[in-house]
Image (cartoon, rainbow, N blue to C red; front, side, top):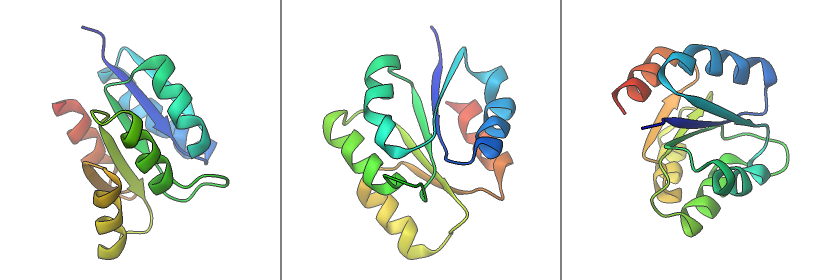
Length: 116
């Protein structure tokens, strides 16, 4: 069975690094640079997981997660951000994210994604 991942990150450098770290564990990895692209990319590729940044230019990751989960309730979303405070973690969970990981801990993301 094909494993697909969607990475949503506005920093091209960080997005490419995530793709590089995770490419051996997924058959296909798709990329978006803003939350406004998530719903159409998800509908097109139907990834197993979405790794979502919080702070993005047009549509932030929490809003994009809420929108995605309202239309695709079985979508699996991991929020990855530099802003690791308990309130943001709570907001991410309320938006429908299954996990919340600091950008400083890419190894934790890798371990989570490998188990899936």
